[in-house]
Image 1 (cartoon, rainbow, N blue to C red):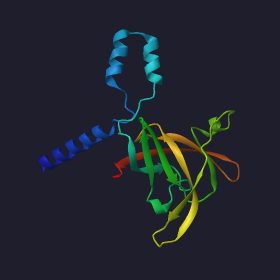
Image 2 (cartoon, one colour):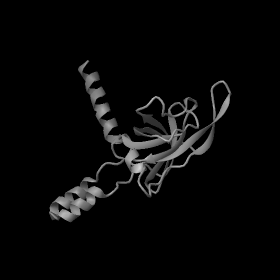
Image 3 (cartoon, helix red, strand yellow):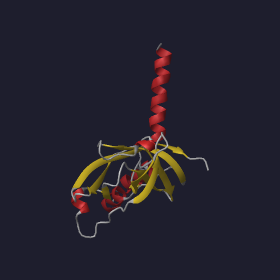
Image 4 (cartoon, rainbow, N blue to C red):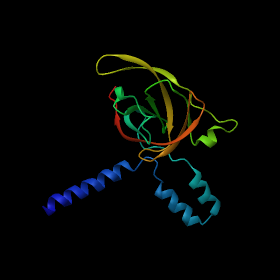
Length: 176
C-alpha cells in the first residue's frame, strides 16, 4: 500500500513539473539578476514575457471559463485549436452563438479605452453529434500562459462589457 501511494505521489509531482514549463520564469536569468544586484535589470526581467516551451505546431486544448454563458460550443467538447508559432500561443474557440460580438484580452475597463484592440469574430460552422450544423462566432484569443487564468472581456449584442477569467490547459499535439 505504501509503495502504491509513493508511486502515485511521485507520478503527480513529475506531471506537475513537466506541465509547469510554459510561462514559467527562467531560473538562470533570475540568478543572474540577483548576482548583479542591478535593480533595473531585475525590473526588466519581471516585465519580460516568457515564451512557451511547446514546439511550434497545432494542438487541441481545453478552454476553461468562469461562465455558463461564455464557453466553447458543445460540438467541440470544451476544446479549441491551440496554435504555437515562434513561441507565441493563440487558441481558436467556436462559441455557442453569434451573441458575443467582440472579445478583448484584458479587463472590460481596458477594453473601453481609446486604442484598445478588440478581437473580431470569425464565422464558424459547427457540426453536432446528430449531424445538424450551425453557424456561430469563433475567436482567436492570445494565450499568455498555459494552466494559468487570465482576463478576457466580452461585449454582446446589448453593448454591455463583461469580465471573465479563462485558462487553457492540457494541450495535445495534432498529428499532421
